[in-house]
Length: 211
Image 1 (spheres, helix red, strand yellow):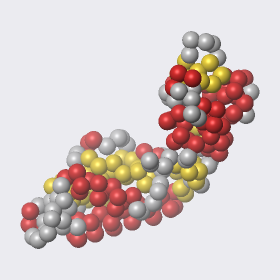
Image 2 (cartoon, helix red, strand yellow):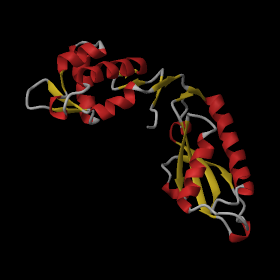
Image 3 (cartoon, helix red, strand yellow):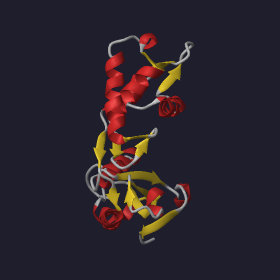
Image 4 (cartoon, helix red, strand yellow):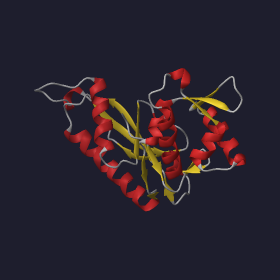
């Protein structure tokens, strides 16, 4: 299971990361072992588990319902719990935010890695045409919750592929790219596309391969 990462200075559903993780664990403890139809919790119990008052609690419940973690029940102020979604938050890592200076260093490393990947990973049928950054990195925020990096890929020219040994499939090649770049940092979120226009705007191209 992929581990969810929460950032210590961010708020989720109106509460801080540590509160969300602790409350999710308490909610799961209430419903563990129960059949789905009995996995319910009252609004009062939710407020207690999150340690909030009625005003904040009502807003919290509305957000949890909107995000699908809770489903309204026929009884007022009673909700069905979606345990699988709460598990993600209950087992989440809580980390300090990524300073922009460090994010810039990671971008530079991503560019170096792209050039190295194109030059040396000849068994992979894909090569990196461009690297672009998008998301929060394009804001002026001094601290980031994540670093979103887009890899624009193209088929590796046959003359640049390995002449001996097994050549990976396109799917395996994409998985290798995600894994290779993911090793740079747990903050990195990699999106692989075959057209720069498929990335969310605004974005900035930080690496371009030779034609």
